[in-house]
Image (cartoon, rainbow over all chains, first blue to last red; front, side):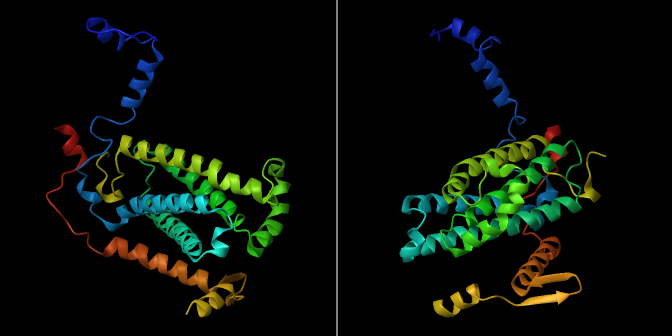
Length: 215
Length: 61
C-alpha cells in the first residue's frame, strides 16, 4: 500500500492494475448513475401491484430484527418467557407475511412477464430467493425445540437423505439446523436479495405488457 | 382468549377433501385471501402524487 498527495494520487486512482480501483469501478458500474436510490419512478409504477416487492423487503427486515432478538434470548427463551413468546410470534408472523407478499409479488411479475428487456437474471435471482427462503424457513421450523420440530425432522429425514444432502445437512441434528438457520442461509438470502435489488435498479422496473416502452 | 387461540393452533385442523385434492381450511383461507389481495392490488387505484414521467423520458434528459 502506498500513500501520496496531489497529482500523483489522481494518477493512482485510475491505475487499472490497482485492485482497489478495479473494485471501485465495478461497484460504481453496478447501476446507472442516479439509479441506486431513485426519488422518481415511471408512471406505470403507480399501482398497488408494484408495492409487494417492497412489502416483502420490509417483512424480511422485521424477520431479521426479530431473529436477532431471539438470538439474544436463546433458542428456548420463547418457551419460558412471555416476552420471548411475543418475539417468537413476531418472527413467525413476519415470515408468514414475507412469504405471502413474496408470492403475490411473484404472481404479479409472472403475469407481466417480468423477464422481458434483459431482466432474465432479475427473474432467476427472484426464483432462487424463493427456493432458498423456503429452505431457511424449513430450518426455522426445525429449530423450535418442541415436538413439532421433532416431527418435522422425523418426516423430512428420509427425503433429504435420499438426495445425499444428509451428509452435511442432517435434519435430525437441531444444533446444525439452528446454525444453518441463523448464519448460513440468512447470509445467502441477504446476498441474493442484494443481487436482486441491484438487477432491478440496473434494468429498471419492468413496464406492464400494454405499456412496453422497449418495443 | 390465549387458551382458546392455542386450542385452534394446536388442534388437528379441519380438512376439505375434493377428489385427489386435500387441503386444510386454514391453508385454503390464506390462499383465497392472497388471491383477493392480488386482485385488489390490480384494480384498486393507487393514490397518485406529483406528476410522474416515464422511465424513457427521464433517461432522455
